[in-house]
Image (cartoon, rainbow, N blue to C red; front, side, top):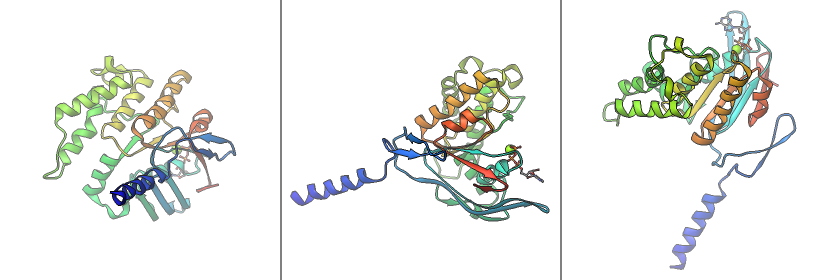
Length: 269
Ligand SMILES: Nc1ncnc2c1ncn2[C@@H]1O[C@H](COP(=O)(O)OP(=O)(O)OP(=O)(O)O)[C@@H](O)[C@H]1O
Ligand SMILES: [Mg+2]
């Protein structure tokens, strides 16, 4: 009896003594201390090392190392041309580095090719760009459903697939959470810039990706809409625990991130 309860107790202790970020203070890049507000075990979500990339004779990334944990929001800042978008595209598996290794949620993405790579990207990664890239001929609802329909079509045999009705219900719920329930049947051209960007965010979230990459997501929005979109990222992280990497020139957004890294001439400084 005693032995069992002792074992139980040590097991429980071990569980609770795993690193937790809640109520811990983090030292920020700028020296300030910020209280982490998301309670979650620390788990490495992104890890990359020695990333090099040149375009022709132009070396752009010069041996980058970078890590991010689950549920962490990291801001990437730096001058125009520093290589931020190139780096984000490599992390997001949209572009291959010349050399170096990218590991997302335990998978070395260089080991994936063709359909396996697209499938991994579709399931694990969400993208939000400055210009939303919505499909103009489809409604808001259809745009949001699209990545889930693709995942369904690509589903492996024997794998449990999400039914179309469930996908529709999920997409409607996401749009509702983003304040767009009255716009589901509108096409992108019938929506404001902020609404289109929110649809793009819902689309990026439909497959519940572990990682969300955003490249200047509020770059072309007015200050009120911009703030709404910024709030949304933090609400999403708090709710779904996603790792969010945001490239931004917006000082206010960068300051809200858990951590900010600055890229200069192809390296983090
Ligand atoms: N496909 C490409 N072919 C050739 N050169 C490229 C290509 N993509 C980017 N570059 C060059 O690589 C450098 C880094 O570009 P990148 O888009 O990563 O910069 P950035 O830090 O995102 O800049 P910005 O803040 O202006 O968006 C730039 O000099 C750019 O001209
Ligand atoms: Mg860029």
